[in-house]
Length: 330
Image (cartoon, rainbow, N blue to C red; front, side, top):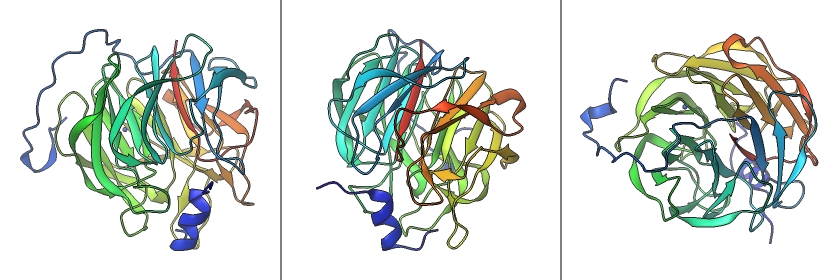
């Protein structure tokens, strides 16, 4: 049976990415990963999975520095929504989506996905960040319609295998907006274990395991947020804000190495939530989502990350989908 998580989740509750780790966590220093690129972005953006009335295995790609529609990339090994997507600039990762499974793709080719390993916990809606060596999966929710968790897992992207425990979020969270630079990963806003919206932004140092710390506050109580980043700045957009306030097109940014609250930076071309973002480190592209009329969106927007003042139409996905994920590389 196919479950549309958003419909279920909303019915069950009101609609509502270096100062070290918090609390003096010591962490475990990772060994530098062989084969790591040091990148998490690239010229090609790949949009993966999602829900269009049924759960999809579709993957499609764009060239980020152009504006156009998408081209077929290949298929996921199984249909998934609310995957956690990220990359090391060469290998793309799609993790979870109501599953333990982690899949990978080679972004410079157009082909299907391969099995990478398993998460430590079956979940969807995690925020994925990567420093080019390690990918971390922050939070998420256990199975469809369940409550948020505080788990953080990590993998070495160049080496297939199961995820290991990294540490915990400051509180349980799902559908947070992901973003990162070369050392720090962020998870912005989202939903907590009670189904209420979260205002704060968590951060981790990706190469050092331990507990996440508070970065600052997001611009509004928001869940199901999309995110992308340059080497210095994170940009987040869209989402579903606190009960009774509905869908949003609002965009916010932070400077990743500077703790503090998010700053407003314009709007997407369309109010929507459950969208995904990717970037070439200069331009960010946001795709898909669920519109205010309750239907999935095929819209892709782009912004110039260093000078964000709202988004511009990029083109269309091949099909309208919510609960979509994305990664970028070359």
